[in-house]
Image 1 (cartoon, rainbow, N blue to C red):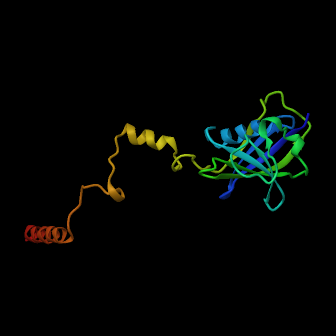
Image 2: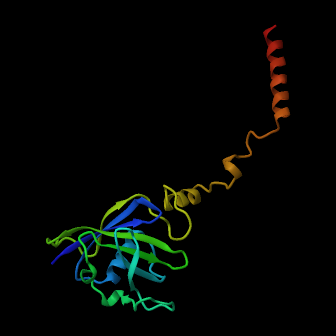
Image 3: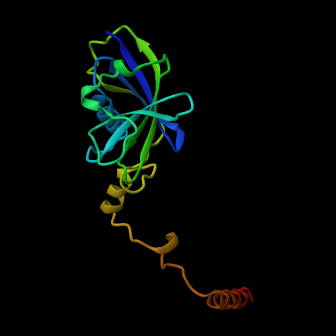
Amino acid sequence: MAVLKFRAYYEDDDAVYRDVVIKHTQSFTELHNAILKAYEFDNKHQATFYRSNDHWQRGREISFERYDKDYKAEPLLMNDTSIGSEIRDTNQKFVYVYDFTKNWTFLVELINVSKDESTKIIYPATSRVEGIGPQQYGTRSLLGKKFVDIEEKYELPQKADGFSEEGEGTATETEENVNENEGVEDNEEV
């Protein structure tokens, strides 16, 4: 049984990608779920794959379900379509679009075919994670969820531009304090 390895690039940054291994007999629904899991997205929105060429042009659509839109050709359904049936080339490409409102787009490319199936892996599986992926809702920092936990634990105040009230004053107040201190120091030396 052939095991296919796909690399799913985040369209806006090709340094961010996830490698997914899947059996050629598994369906596009399983690939869809594997990509969402690899990018830590939920499974609440519409999705579709497009068979693609080397220039990432969208071809035949493989849709999660039949949506209320105009189709050039009747779409294949993910659940009824095995991945192996849509492989036309050794480096077959697909464009994967998730959540038609946000239009999350991933470029999915076949990068390896193996005849050896591992008994230690439950397919499909994520085999490699590269880069910090986009966060489905909101923004993600380098610390991710950990920063929110730190902020809540230590009750960090929300101040503008990161400055606190301590040490704040006008420039003239600061200059007056410096002048007063210089006078005191001069008197002490005498």
